Image 1 (cartoon, helix red, strand yellow):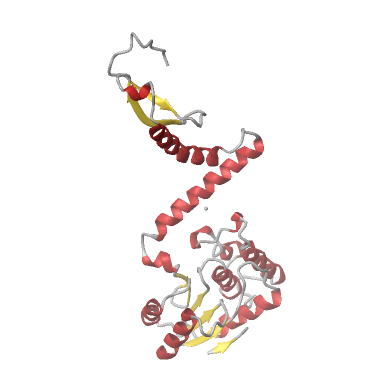
Image 2 (image 1 turned 30 degrees about the vertical axis):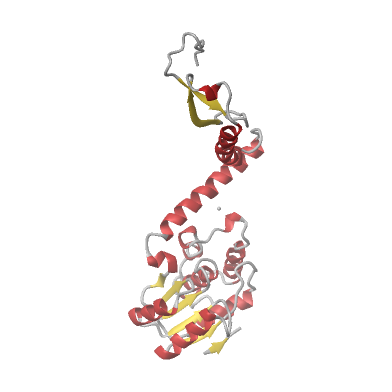
Length: 271
């Protein structure tokens, strides 16, 4: 182990006896009628018990809160944008939540960066890590979370690596802080030097792992900058537009690209 650093009115007399009338929600507002309906022959229409009225108020309050959250204040260009963002965020949460429940690989965020050579993932449990090591014949692991002796995830990962004869290296990065060019250079050099196949991981496998994967594709495999940048995308769970701070990974990648412009397709590695 090495340590590298979400209607028409109907009068009462004309109305049929079996017509039911919706009870208007005391909170008022369009669309805020409780689903509870009362018959005209029901004495409670004339004098409703306090308990039933309280229940009706509570029944419509929940839908009122959700309506107001989605609708927000009276529409203006600014509030329309807010509503659009809320709808987008809610849609993303639904899609991602559904995807995460469909398959184990999505939960682990395991993907190939260079088939048979470099893989990326989120934090794996010891059993899952052992399976991946055996299946893909992993020879080295690059942990971007940094050394955490005493933490179950860390101690389990180190022990599993040792048992399998896999080199384990720590290289600590923050998903919300810009990485300097010298540091990304060191990361690229380390990925180039480590035994292959190599597994690179962080906690979620989205941001720090995305940066490392993009750097590998650009600097070592000589991908175009735009093609390599696809490693930092929503497909892997990277959402910089949600103001979570992870746009730092994108900035760090493009800073490296500006410092290491492509020479030619046949040129030397960009590091």
